[in-house]
Image 1: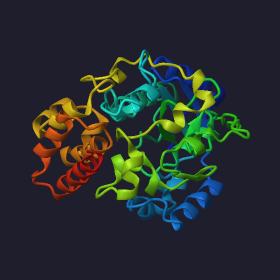
Image 2: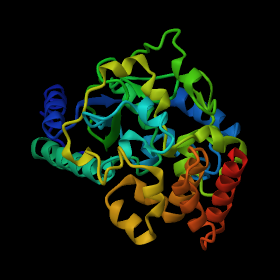
Image 3: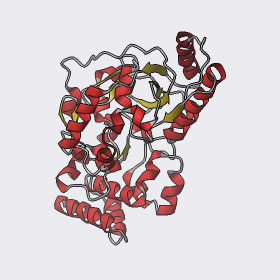
Image 4: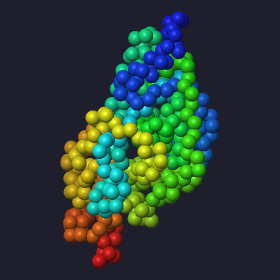
Amino acid sequence: MNNAPQDLDLHALAGDIKRWGQELGFDRVGIAKPNLGVDEAHLLQWLRRGFQGDMSYMGRHGVKRARPNRLLAGTVRVICVRMNYRPPGLEPDVRILRDGSRAFVARYALGGDYHKLMRRRLQQLARRIEAVAGAFGYRAFVDSAPVLEKALARDAGLGWIGKHTLLLSRDSGSYFFLGELFTDLPLPESTPGSEHCGSCRACLDVCPTQAIVGPYQLDARRCISYLTIEHQGSIPEPLRPLIGNRVFGCDDCQAVCPWNKFARPTDEAAFRPRHGLDTADLVTLMRWDEAEFLERTAGSAIRRLGHVRWLRNLAVALGNSPRDDAVIGILRARAQHPSALVREHVAWALARHAGKS
């Protein structure tokens, strides 16, 4: 329950919140009124079409995702933050994707996991607000609950939702994380973002699996990010050759977006590449046993895969790689892995190479 002083200047507080957020390392801060009726209808249609694949939690949460007050009673505003994550000095994505012996890891996952870092800073922001406004109701979220974060960020003026369904900004592209602070403070709202995709369809045309089935429509069942991160089981065989050497996620739709020429590299040391994942070769990664995988992915978003699905993804990439003795050798070394999921994908990869000989 909001116990803020009656004489509190909410307009001044909103300005302070945006300044404090930037002092804490967020690149942009805005404030949204949680009125997501149109977005709720879009979500329900997306679910009816089955585009969520086996992400059953999307359906279980129902309309709660579009109604913040159901997630935190008393919510009247959402403070939204944006944090750039692409490290400086990376090789162009296309150079790695053209080298079939190397592994492509989505740029957001090269460094440390962002969830705890951003949530901690949102908590710090809340404490600063509390020092001025007194006790107030709030809760911080960073991809940790059913939240329509892109729609809220759009309404908070942090950008617009592009045709690839990611949030875009004219001054920062799309390589950023989002976080939210739900609150019962009736702060003045920011001006919502306006759309600037125009007639461009670069993201639709570049998608390797044609997962973007229309502007603003993503079929997750075909999306490489879904297949290599969210999907628990066997990757459909017709899609495996299209995955190429992408072993964790896919950034193609971002890489071709004209607005990403304005993307700003991050200054956050926690997001710098770890363990050479920005330049690693597939054979080296496939050699990691479970202990090494757990050690090298500690504090990383990749850890959530588990070793088995990591090997599944690498087997697919190795099946798509140029044939050489090291590739065949490591695949054969994994051919009797205890996991049926790994064995299946390794057998597929070996069969692919047998067909190339």
